Length: 364
Image (cartoon, rainbow, N blue to C red):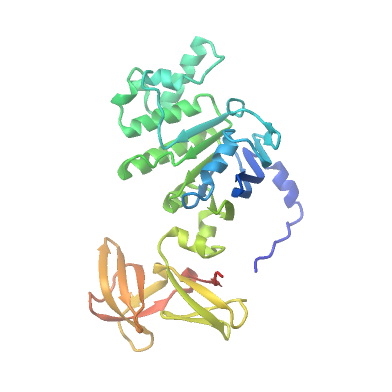
């Protein structure tokens, strides 16, 4: 059971002093009878990058649309830069929220040159100021030399940089990215994404990135919000979610895991790969044990551990991905770094690293 931890003296005051770029409280949204966003809370400080992660259909994009003003708020409140922008019965239009948006589709205007695309949203500025703003942001994304180019002549990465400059030129109070880098080739994606987020952090723009890619979230997010069925299941730093996942969904979000059902006996749970401590879970409870591939270490047979046979082995540089067959017919996946003994068909022993092993009440 998870218990709330009381705030230390002065903690509430410290939270009040913390500058807030985005605050979402108790946001709930329905499509007909179906709840797609359920009591979502988010808080971002200026310059922070938060990642909203979860499987397709979990409510990520709807949350983003509500924050942007593309959907009317049914329940809850949204504040941007300390200003209330939405509550039931009150919704500022998107253009008044000072929100920058980037989607998987770069959505550049094909009939406008690069500079005109960047300057499209700069209304109310005189010509000289507008041109200076466009030039400054093209320089920030290393696209100054392409100011007179047409979008169709640019590579995918170059189009993404132009889209970022266009989103940032109005100097938004908040940036929302919806799978914004997923259309790029793998080799280009990380470079463009890291460049874009560096610009956003430097500008002090709070940024919410929606992604289904847990690896991307871990690499770039200051905090991760893991979402399932419209709810935030757990929020924290990447290290916190990885080391202390709240449930099997979060534990399995960082890659394939081995799952075993069992019961608590004498404070422990027996699995085909060894025993696990059950913590405070009650005696006799049916549980699910999550064993990450990196929790299992392969060693030569010494006669003191669980024996297994190597069924498959792939050596990916310093990382070895191994498929082991266990007594009784079950099998597990192992990911191990460094030197490893044994080839396909060889018998080995395995030991467990408890820091990568988690026990939860079984789902009913």
